[in-house]
Length: 203
Image (cartoon, rainbow, N blue to C red; front, side, top):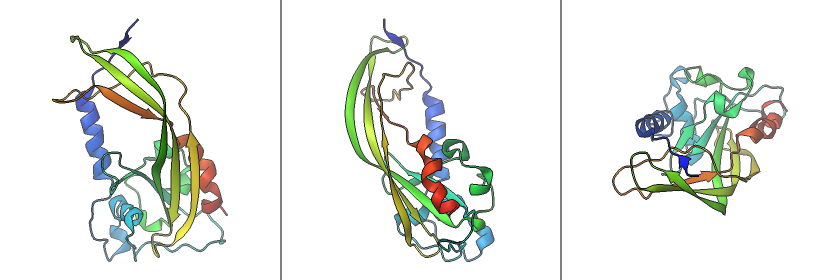
């Protein structure tokens, strides 16, 4: 039986734009800590030192607030903010999306560094079309690099191995001109993040 395909193209585009708005942008960091935004701190992932960011002292009592960014899958020079709902961090570990970024002492940058094709899933029927969609599922390895944004120092690195073992039931395809209706799915690292950053946030 062919799987039903849900086309939510405009929602997909909207979510993508929202993520980019909160990601790295090349904007020069402000001189006033009160003006720090998430996209300023995102520049830490590409080597920018944020002089007005909060300082981090290794070994001092925490919590040391942290924000995480995920490398953009279309442009690896851009890092998108990971929302609190994606990281599952306790409130005292991080800041709200519209919160005070001047208190952030640590920036985590997540990048996929390895992938292995597990299975090619076929038979996703495109509504009102004779075309079918295909999903490729991958095991993946991610590297989480944690920085002090104030100094640019690498505080630590962590490796996350993720696994995919079954084809998804529902898939959202982009069906613009020239699309080949192949969707890639990777193991999700989100469940590991709390454990990996705890020793940095609460040493």
